[in-house]
Length: 275
Image (cartoon, rainbow, N blue to C red; front, side):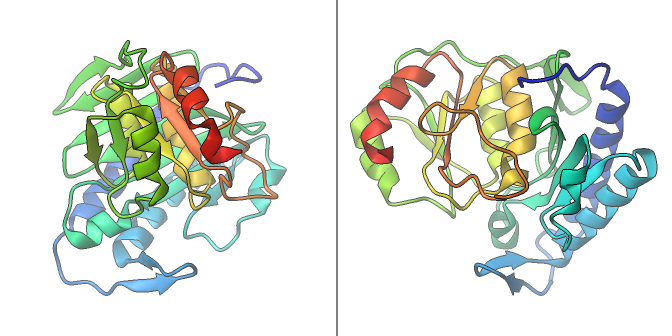
């Protein structure tokens, strides 16, 4: 989390955590139930759980922080957020395909941008009862079952030994070639970006590579804030900072998230795939 110092974000963090957990509880009321799965642009699924979660989160954030902009996956207005110094970036149900399939790899994600830099992140994984949270300069934490634990990434420095976490539903074919190049022997698959990055932040995994241009700003903001406060790193595949700008809502170059220690070694090995 680079850029201008964010100052005290304790109130923002508390409100975002409460909103994410309330939305997560609402999502669980639909989990494994009967609901209609609609399709939106790009043939992506959207459900009543996505819309209910978004409504809860936006209502809470607008009530407490009317001076901040909002960018959210299901919200039609995707431009006005750029007029604000700070903007909330929301994915009300990240990993909808996992949710529809009855798997646990989905989450509610709330991030906060300041001048295009992630300064706060909250990821609630409702099935597991886990909430990851971080604010710039305040460290990163995970709450599981009411117990808070400080987050710290692993110390694995070898690209070959890095434990990979990858997508379940959106796995790209190029990942097999990247794995072969890295010499990866350990891979775990789960849906939500926030859940995957959470596993990096806890030190359970070391590396996550997303080589596709499909992810959007709301997929990256909260996870990046959490990972970087836990000591990790999240960049594009060339090692450049991810761009959170209004003219492009996609992270078009893909991204690499890691414990930071193995980051440069991984980038050097996968460079031919992103030339």
